[in-house]
Length: 160
Image (tube, rainbow, N blue to C red; front, side, top):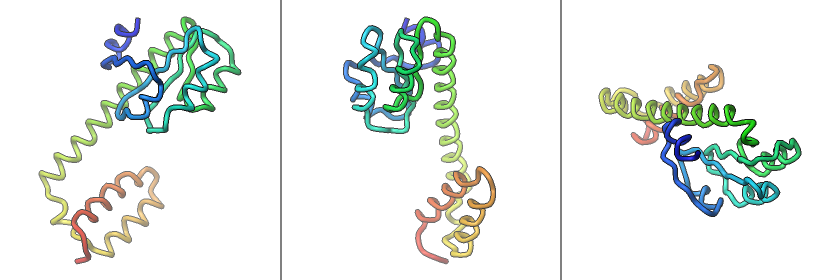
């Protein structure tokens, strides 16, 4: 089941025996399977240091108290299989799409940066930095774009 599901969603399946290994993974989606030992899932998630990656818990017990305990311990979601299989499949495929989009955006930004050499256009102007700061507070969703420009300005260094 796991290899087929990973392939269907566009992932490479990597199997580990210790949940703490997931603390080192980036740009990935993790799954901790606790079928038969669901009572140990919350403890397993407490061993995983937060990385920003989505990690779901999978078990066979459709019990809301278990789901709450596991999510409070750090799981992104809890899926009780087989009844939640379609939800789980959808979650995995959505995670793959989010990762692919993030990589595409990063690659696009690098290509555009190299193509237009923004550092020579923007310089390190204090006025520009101030304007970017104001825009990030006023325009919804602009925080990420303004942060990218701030990093580019920091790379150039100094005021001009």
